[in-house]
Length: 485
Image (cartoon, rainbow, N blue to C red; front, side, top):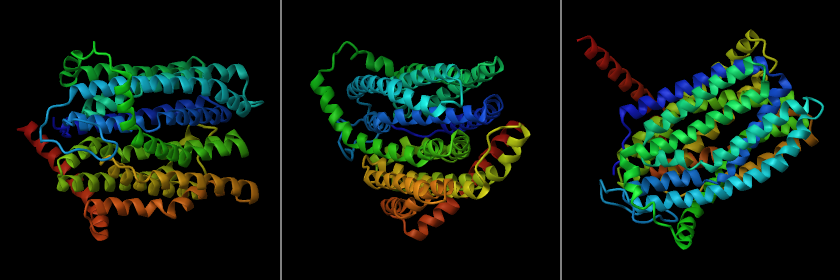
């Protein structure tokens, strides 16, 4: 069955983008006003642990989404690497999809159990040490328990959103995110207004994410009669041998994707954890807030690319090089424009907005913020290149990603322990290590796969997004004119 990005998919994608981004922007002042700088720093430590725990997914969710797309296109088997060509408009392989869902359920039950043990022991000890003599234990321990239980539940149900995306239900996957964010926003504001502080933020996160997972299950079963087509297999018990075979087919790329996720975590979160250890929670809150602002901007920039991923996998299977080039250049170029322009604006405008609401937490100084912005821009660009390469079910970049991340931590620890650079050294480390290889190599590989010269690649990144904006403007004008006729 074909997977095509419709106008409704794009519309819902941007509706989700602007709603969730808007909600994050609305939510941030409430949190900043109602939490002390130490509590903000601890919240960023919470979220760092949450992100680290999610890494135990180890690339399964991304790999599952990609393989679901192949199965939805009619693939007869799941390959360890690459994919088999299928006839155009082939019917989905529902039995293989059923096996994939059941195998995923088993995998994520095991992963959730491991996370529960890890966060309830090591995580709790670290949180106690970080907050010691800065926040009353009764104020943060309940919040931490609610938060880590939320993470455990998220992991148990983590395979459902990728299933939605994998079958091309782009609109539905965005509706799920919108619903969860609205619930989280309302509950956070109410809880903070009632004076529950960090507990309110954790509880709202818990309920919002539970809504997201349950809504994903509901919408998946409703999409294109999926539930009816799968129901005939529900009495079948998948033999352990078949689950094992399917797991072994998925695992080679899953663990590589997992190492990439670990690398991304280190690039974005290690600075917060190191800052909390060496410079205190106030500095950790500044690093965390600055990165959060850039993360919001990058989510806006990457929205179109993420929408196109299932279609890029589909076009790869059907060898449509022209559409692949168009998808890649438009989405990657638009992302670069948004991150650069939005990031610079945020660096200079955010301090005034934070002063306006009398926030105790501030961004990093301008120079450090600009360095962190450049680092995020370059990492994001080569990450999108890697994501495109992965649509071919090959993940060659995992080794260089993880080696760079390990090298980054080593450089950061050297800077904080043996130099006077302090937080400047921590921020500079990621930029230096990525410039050595990843920032330029993987964009070069993706452009070669697309048969683009360096000149065509750079020109495409610069001009294709502008063409896209002009096309969208023309469509809006035409639509407006029709309404007035």
